[in-house]
Image 1: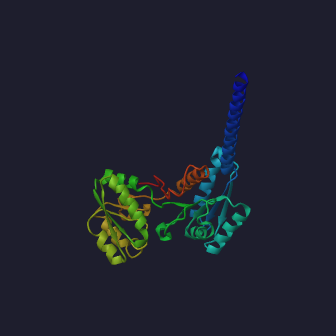
Image 2: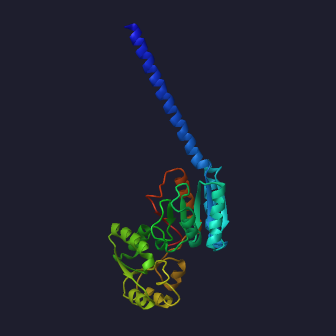
Image 3: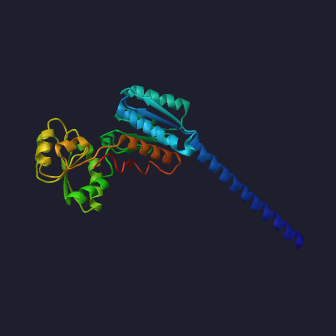
Length: 298
C-alpha cells in the first residue's frame, strides 16, 4: 500500500512540475513576444511632401513615440514621397527589405494609395493614415488599415453648438464622396437629440439653395460645397443663421462656430494609436476611425 501511494505521489509530483514548467515557459514566451512586439518593431512615417503641414504632423508623431519610456528602442524613420505614388511605393518596399514587420503612418492621399498597393491586408504592417479629406473614396479598408479623421469628434462639436445656440436641427450639405463623414455626424447627433438634415449635392446652385434655406448648417471639408464660387454665398448665409465650419478662416466670414485641426495634436494622437497597436491593445479589424476630440479653437 505504501509503495503504491509513493508511486502515485511521484506521478502527481512529476505531473505538477510538468505543468509548472509549461506555465513558466508560456509566461516567458508572453514576455518575450510582448517586448519583441514593442521594442523590435519599426515605424515608417511617410509624408506626401516636404512642406510645413506634413512636417509638423510627422515630427509630432515621432516626438510623442520617443517620449514614451518603454518605446526607446523603437526605430522611427521619416520619408518623403515627393507627391509621387511610385516614390512612395519604393520607400515602403525599402522598409520591407529591412524589416517585414513594421507600422506605417501615411500622411496624405498619395502615401495612402501606395500603402494600399504595397502592404494592404498584411497583418505585420498596421497602417494609420491621415490628412486625407475624403477617405470614403478608398472604399472598404483592408483589415490592417485605420485612419484619423480630419474632423474633431462630431459629438463634441454638436454638443458645443447646441449649448451655444440651442439648435435642434442642422443642415449638412455634402457630395457623394463624403457620405461616411455625414453618417458619423448623424450617429453623434442621435445621442444628443439633434436632427441632421443631410442634403446630397452635385453643383453650386444646389449649394446656394441649401445653405440659403434659413436653417443652421455644417460645412464639412467638401470641394463641391466649399469652393471659390460658393464663398460669397456662404458669407451671406452665415450672417443670418449660426453655422459650423472646418477652419478658423470661416470665422472671418461670420461663421459662428469654427474649428481647425491642431496638427501637432493630431501627430500626438497618431503616435498614441500606433503604440497601442504595437502593444496589441487596438485591433484595426474592429476600429477603423479615430478622431482628435478637441482641436484648434471653437
